[in-house]
Length: 138
Image 1 (cartoon, rainbow, N blue to C red):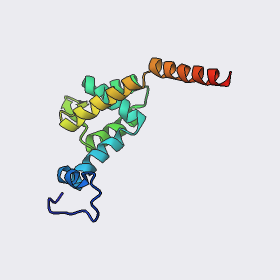
Image 2: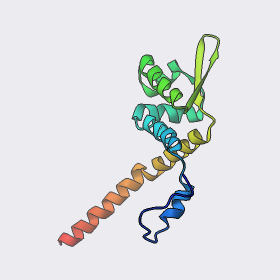
Image 3: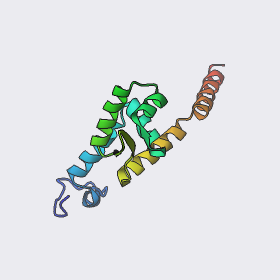
């Protein structure tokens, strides 16, 4: 973003300083496209698997209980967004998560979110809220 840009209103919150650090629109477009691809649960599962191992379509299909054509479709989208790479070994194509900062960061985010949303913590939180409401009603 241009360092010379001045905001119409100065509210004293430091927005003009933030503007100096804000990446250009194409950077946001790249990240947005990658996140959009991970917005589909099937692609998210495939991406997560490929962050941990290199696999062929047949094995990914078996691991996700999906058809090979469906897996191929998702892999094409993940590959086009730069999150997955492919290489050929004989007749077989093998896929893995791309070795890019974006793919590594999104993998970390996925794992962080999965930990935050773990069933035990969620259940304990719901039981705590239920107990509070029960005591309030008494």
